[in-house]
Amino acid sequence: MLLQLDQFEAAQRYYLMSQTLVPRPIAWVLSENATGSYNLAPFSYFNAICSAPPLIMLSIGKKPDGSDKDTRRNIIERKYFTVHIASIDSLNALNQSASPLDADESEVEMLGLATTEFEDFPLPRLADCKIAYACELRDIHIVGEVEQAVIYGEIKTIYLDDRIATEDDKGRIKVDVDKLQPVSRLGANEYMAPGEVVTLKRYY
Image 1 (cartoon, rainbow, N blue to C red):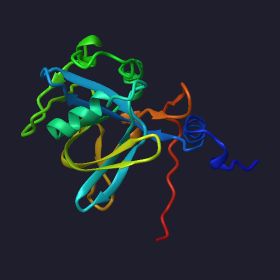
Image 2 (cartoon, rainbow, N blue to C red; image 1 turned 90 degrees about the vertical axis):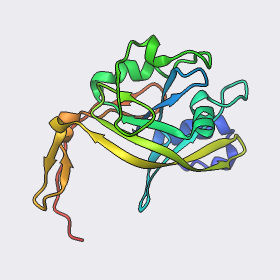
Image 3 (cartoon, rainbow, N blue to C red; image 1 turned 45 degrees about the vertical axis):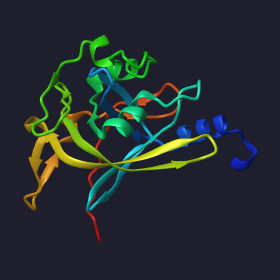
Image 4 (cartoon, rainbow, N blue to C red; image 1 turned 60 degrees about the horizontal axis):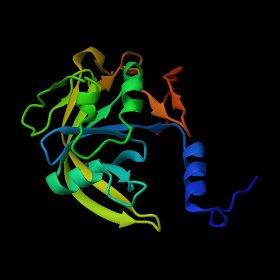
């Protein structure tokens, strides 16, 4: 089967891309609303793009009514955001945080999630997440016929739970994936729980 994407509408292209580009990491993004409350939302058009400087990318579209999504607007207006890597035990809360709320409402409060100080950073992090990035807006590119904001965030600090931190044979910090139990995104309403970890020798 060959699928020529210029023969599909944008919504169908999105569906095909999200069904086939799997699994995808999920950025669980905390940002500050204009009222001072905290917005929380998941995004799976997300990945690392550079290590010098340390940059991640989020691609965020618009709401069905054409207005900016709250996370997008908050990052543009206030520059700082916290990205969490969620574990499988947070999946229900992560999924519920995608529900649309008014701009002055907080998913953090709605879900009863605890936050804790992110040292030397203006925003907190979720207390129960084992990995969090303190990020500052670096740049934004607007792309696409159906407008997407490609947001480049510079990682200032990484929080890593001591319980999942190990050391490899070269003395580098290594994450114990079995203890992290990260959740990833598939297509439609599907997520992926952690599975078997395969370790292979690298020849390059």
